[in-house]
Amino acid sequence: MALDYYIPGTRGGFPNRILLVKTDEKLSMKLDITLFPLYCDGCGHFFSHFYIHKGSRKGVVGQITCPSCGRDVQVTDEGSMVDSVCINDHPVNFSSLYLLDFTFIEEADRLHDGQIIKALMAKYNKSELNYLTIDELTNICSASSCVQLTGDMKFQTDTRFAALPPDINRWIEFLYRSGVNLPSYVTILKSDHDIPSLEGSAIWRMRNLDKLISQFPSRRKTVFDTEKEVIKRLKEHKKKN
Image (tube, rainbow, N blue to C red; front, side):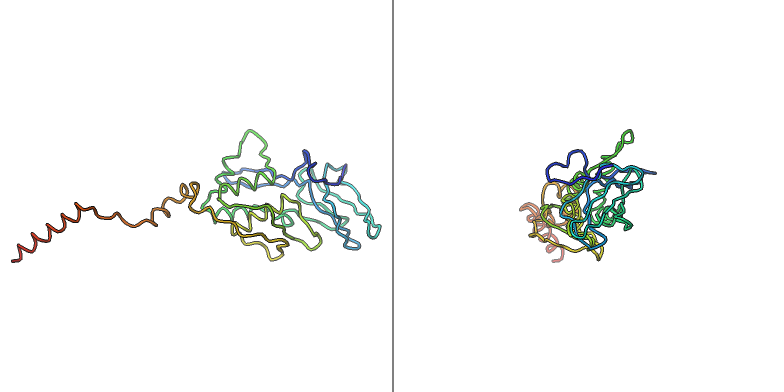
């Protein structure tokens, strides 16, 4: 078992990730979370470091002593695919803490004409384990929907935790900028300037040809078309007289 400090730039081979699962031509996902914040369930102290889950033994990931009150904070899990942990007796569900429920992806997909799940399907390989890091997931969803990100926004999804890992903040920024309805418990800790839409770009035009064509007026008449109409009206006038 191992529970180590996370030092930025040294995450190594332990990124937060998901496993894409395909059943009856439908996608879903399972979580495998390795990087998370901690707090003391005794005094409420928020630990200043993120921690890396490097495995568990009989469900025990590791133990840290709270520097504020001296209480032992033990982290446990329930299996090899980590979608939740317990901090002492208090569960932490990462699908809600990190907004990594597949329903958020489905909502973003509906808002962007089915392009997101289509792109994820293209990544799926039935002969392999289909793991994606959260950064890879965010990049695929952002590129397929033409949603631009700054990576500078910060969010809070649980008052027990004062900060979320950088890859999770970026993921939630994608959901926010794509127009997904975020749960009421989500708070923006650091907003960022508005960024220009990709509407009108080459990628956008390829995916929105019908919308683009509708913006142009109908074909203007040429000089020859106009002359033909004049001659036609003169002939009709002569017939009446």
